[in-house]
Length: 333
Ligand SMILES: NC(=O)c1ccc[n+]([C@@H]2O[C@H](COP(=O)([O-])OP(=O)(O)OC[C@H]3O[C@@H](n4cnc5c(N)ncnc54)[C@H](OP(=O)(O)O)[C@@H]3O)[C@@H](O)[C@H]2O)c1
Ligand SMILES: [Zn+2]
Ligand SMILES: [Zn+2]
Image (cartoon, rainbow, N blue to C red; front, side, top):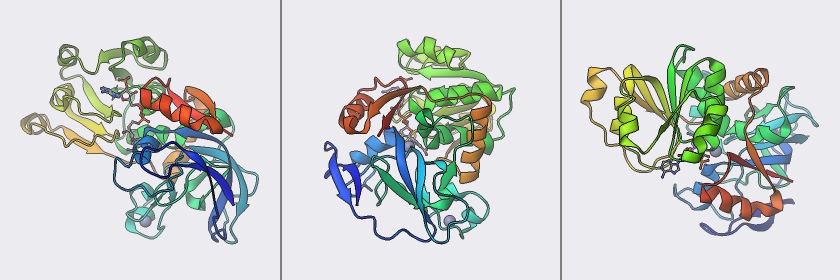
């Protein structure tokens, strides 16, 4: 039996919960969880905002721990190894996306907390392809948030060949956004933090931003017209997207990773006349995660975390919900 924390219905408090994971799959590994970050997607899933949550629901998809068991056909991982697990717990491994290394685009990938039990637990299981070793120089205590928040903002830098000469904006300086500022600064970019929290402006500059703009102030946004090659939005709310399109250079891109539920309402001419793009992406492939970890180790990039014990999980979730977390909450067993 695996001891975990689960919600029995949408929005409910998490309670101690035990489940029988059954026999270990031949290509699966079991991780003894040491730390697990809390992503805003855990809250959205807990509340069933996306209509795909199954209860009892065990959140947690920013796992760091040690391998405690491996299936009979596992070749790449060994018991005792330090590893992490993010949003995906498995891929089909044979579709065109998987075959070309875009596992994160696999249509039948399995979400760590979608129809299976996640990392707010003593142990969690996943297919070996989705479990990535932690390189030396990446500490276990703060690495969890890299496995979802971190990779989600790192992957666009690989996908769009972002250059050190690019000006890049990040909207929303929360769990994802504060890691994005650090990656972009190390990448060499001219970095702007768009934040709705005046109190975060000074910290954003310390974390790697060169400039800050109030993300809800029409005048400040208008003053930045035509400046950005790329803007990454990490917010889960509707903002004035047409105003943001106006801040892009010709061929600039507004890229969504924040899960905004309201449809976009965009003027087409500002896209056509300056050949601008709008796009979105989910997390990243196992290869991209491994590259991100090496990059984080080399540049000493670490999520800024607040620590709670696993048994304080409800307090921790309430703090994330309040918007006060600076900048990612990590549960430690
Ligand atoms: N694409 C993917 O694969 C992927 C992966 C992980 C997460 N996500 C999604 O990404 C989003 C962000 O996740 P997170 O964990 O970073 O969340 P978070 O820590 O709660 O940060 C979100 C940030 O958005 C800003 N924000 C919130 N409400 C706002 C409002 N009313 N107006 C303006 N700004 C507001 C805040 O930044 P400021 O205080 O700076 O304004 C806040 O810190 C969520 O929707 C999550 O589900 C997507
Ligand atoms: Zn596939
Ligand atoms: Zn996440």
